[in-house]
Amino acid sequence: MKDERSEEIRITDVVAHPLTQKLPRPTVTSWGSYDEVSMVLVEVRTDAGLTGIGETLGRFAPRAYARLIETALKPRLVGQPVASIGVHWNAMRHALSGRAGGVLLEAMSGIDIALWDILGKSAGLPVATLLGGMNRPEIDVYAAAVNWGPIPWMEEDLETLIAEGFPLIKVKMARPVEEAVRRIEAMRRKAGDRVDLCVDANWAYGLDEAVEVGRALAANGYTWFEEPLAPENEQGYEALRERCEVPLAAGESNFTVDQAKRLVTSRTLSVLQPDVARAGGISETRRMADLAGAFGVAYAPHIGMSGIVCETASVHLAAAMPNFRVMECEGDRSPFKTEIADLAPGSLRQRNGKLDVPKGPGLGLTIDWDAVARLRAPE
Image (cartoon, rainbow, N blue to C red; front, side, top):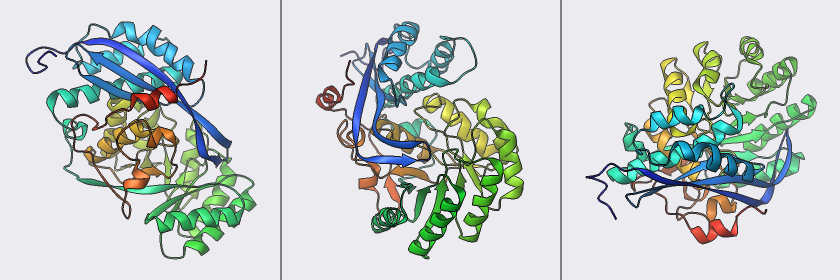
């Protein structure tokens, strides 16, 4: 192995591993019910013998993402110095023409995370420290989520998450509005004063519907109203902000900092929620968090149905960003979180809404390649 301290580390290969898993239980949102989900684990190899690991949010068609990574992005990276992450980000961005977003940015995300992992390993430092960390040994997390469904089922989900010690719990909402209001009231009755609650609508509503749901949330003391409208409807968010007493949260659908700009700079959002496996990796997510901080908007990482690599990268960002508020902590025990690395998922490690930040170099993860092989997406 070459001495990475005395020689410039260069990229020798980029390998994309398309993975698919059956969820232990379906995730149910306003979009539908999901019992299977995919992602791409990205491996960046170097001439120093160091390997970085990243995760791409490719929930469906993972082999298409893997093909893009290996044919359009890899040739721009092999032979280049690892440390030039900004140069690599811009080079990858120009692999496809058109407005930034979609599959390209999600594919880039996995590579960018892996490059930061290598930098941390070469320096012997956690990624949070490389980012100029706030010296947080632990971060605040909230439970995600109580699935949309019959009220008794939702009450059961809520009791489980309360018993696990989370002080803030997300509840999924959908249509029709009348049923959403019933569930908002039922969840508050069940929770009482034991925990705080927030709602995620996954774009379920039109503006007037969102106003009505927002009234119910305000009357029942909810903490925030997440993604009530489609992300493109920025004017609708601005109108809703004037008519809704509950703080608005959004941002998981943003790919780049310019897509977060309008609702952040206008302070329409109180909470910005980019997903590191979608939003151009650690580099671009950090820029989003910095922008939010400059305008007094909180940063709250989104992880959704992702794996342990996305979750861990999000923990490092949370530990580093001054305006960090709280991170999503998915309660599922999926193989992406429990099998592919040596670190247990946050839902198992958290205690009373507190989660330790990994102290090892890079992301602090060791991958189980046998598990990766078992989860490989079918041809």
